[in-house]
Image 1 (cartoon, each protein chain N blue to C red):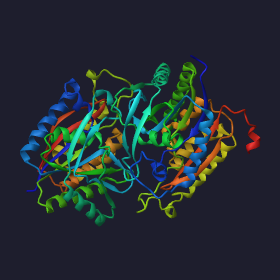
Image 2 (tube, chains in turn green, orange):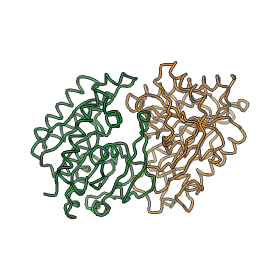
Image 3 (cartoon, rainbow over the protein chains, first blue to last red):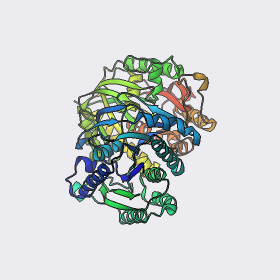
Image 4 (tube, rainbow over the protein chains, first blue to last red):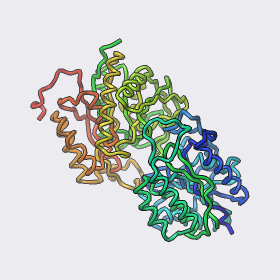
Length: 270
Length: 303
């Protein structure tokens, strides 16, 4: 089976850069558990979609064979730098770029030294694939693409990876509820901002565990409005599209706050 | 030191296409020109800036969007390569800029004293956003005037336009107080496009001007209405219309730079000088100047 894993992970740099802060420990520890599971699944390639790589023209895909550099998050720069070293599966990426015309989407490759890789992609790769064993296919989040279009793009990426004989994992990088604290807080006291957000996040995670695929898109539309969910949860649409809308259940490896916003690591059972 | 003042404010939009069209040595991408009317507008603005002889340029950029408060560049020298994440084919710019840290700290302090969450950015590896760099390059390509870079807090989007712009006005007030307290002769730069409706695909030759025009006629009409009011010095009327303009033209001024600048200048009812207008991938861009150092011109004369 070429599809070997699927993960929903957060892109906030806070648990990554400060894993010992008590409220962020559940996410940091869950990332470690997810990395172990992913290593056991032995993927050749990770199909990554991060809500933080924003595109507005065309569908962009990272097409540079090796992307290295040092990133500083524009919000959380005081917590440290984010070095990265990404290996791209250029063959699968090139084929994805050609294939999206079939759904009426024009795609472009991004192959530039110094391109600003987003925080979410760096955090996910650094946590799950620190040794660079798996190569990446990275798709941008075009803000004008909706749930369905995002799901279609993931399906194309999965089909393409399969056609090239890759063992692949689907990784959606983004948060849950997007309500943050607007004032400075004691980081050791971080929590989900608002009981309703917490309840809705837990409701979403329960649905994911139940594999209620049919109801998820509808649920997420309402959930996104009520919780300012990260990019309408399009990173979840990416995962479901990559799974072909089929999975057996899910395990929530961790759930917690990132400056009031919700974050979770979910491993899908295939 | 005291008795600083704001000598002028510029509406100084930041499409990276303008840098690309100019082919400066700092930018890796090469073009055959394009967007000349806007680039020539900036040439006129550069001449004005030369005459104004400011100590410092302050720029408020929507492409350094922060979630927790208003941030200020706080490292004396920043350098690196800024690649536009949206238009990496056009903008890969090697920058080096000097920051007026003392003034930035004063701005931050004044903002805090007015109840705004404010932070100094002290990480020397920070990559300055392309909006800040484009505006600064276009207004002063020599890079010989220190700058204060200010983030755009996301409050107009996260809260409401009204609440967000009220915050920006407080930030403007704080900025003016800091400039006066530190004795600087300052020029403010509002790095904003007007109508922000844009095309969704790029021409094969980006600088093919046969493909360039307003994306939206209604948006263009809004831009002309706002510019004409500014030209007549009817500032209050512009700001009373601003929420409607933002909603109907998807105007980038929602991010707050224009409000910040005008609040800092005290919303002067003086004619703005239009250096030029043009579209970039369909968006409306005006380069305009409000010279506070000039003797007050009678508003009626510009009408």
